[in-house]
Amino acid sequence: MKARCCWGLGALGVLAATAVVAAPAQAPSQARAQTPSSLIERVHARALQSFRQGRFSEAYGRFIALADDGHAASARYALWMCENGPALFGSDWDCAPHEIEDWAHAASIPAPAIGARSYRAAGKPR
Image (cartoon, rainbow, N blue to C red; front, side, top):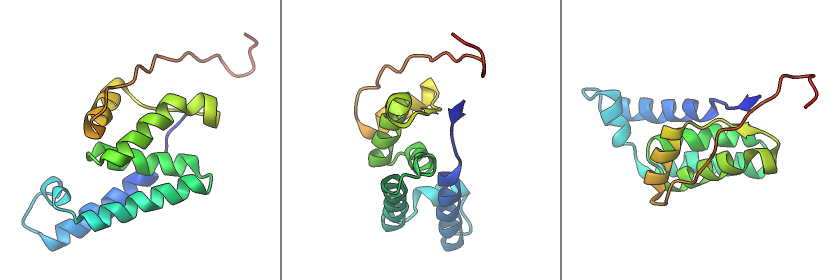
């Protein structure tokens, strides 16, 4: 079972709403681009706090939401969690090839080779 949560999406929704209130004549995507960096860093700090407290699904959701918006540090964490999910967390963090490319670009690092994983049906022996 793949683990992917939407915790970070709520955080970005707050970011976008804050920016839209500050600039109501702009489209949400334009407003999000103008979100104060201090607010983005607070959301990133919450993601780190979730990670440190062992709430890995919540942390991953927050990291990917910020990574999708080009936040470099969050993109590195999202890539690392996706790449090492089964071995370190016992969960396969969902990440599509285009996300891997986008996050690597945002983090200014080469995209890791994360191969496709196969799954067996629950209850069936290998």
